[in-house]
Length: 141
Image (cartoon, rainbow, N blue to C red; front, top):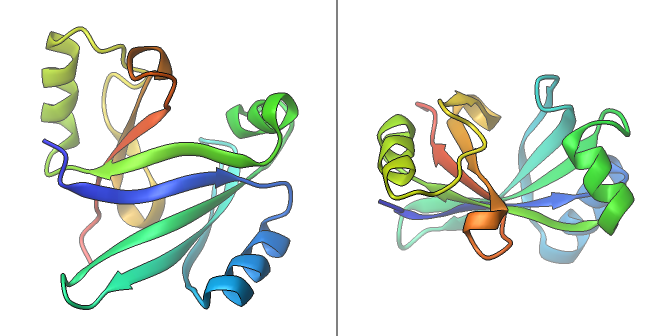
């Protein structure tokens, strides 16, 4: 079951320029910058904190490491912009089982390593009205 929107992923040509734009425009704090070689990206997580709810959500900026990566191909086809929506879940593996049983097309058959120690899995946009969807089981703080 989806718990909340964890993050929105935005494909960018220059991570440094995008970080600066989002920091200047919205005064967001960068809480992580990582290279995820498996996914072929250099990424930054900018936190949106809701003090009342005690939960955070993020803007994830994604710069491809090469043109032949998923985000690199996305940029070549569509340019910069919204790449995916990530939803927090309690258990990615059980969500994948449930969704597969419902006939939802999975990109990932099992969880893999994501940002800030999370377990993640992607669902194909064909089954969700054109939206690349990521399930996120947040890492332990």
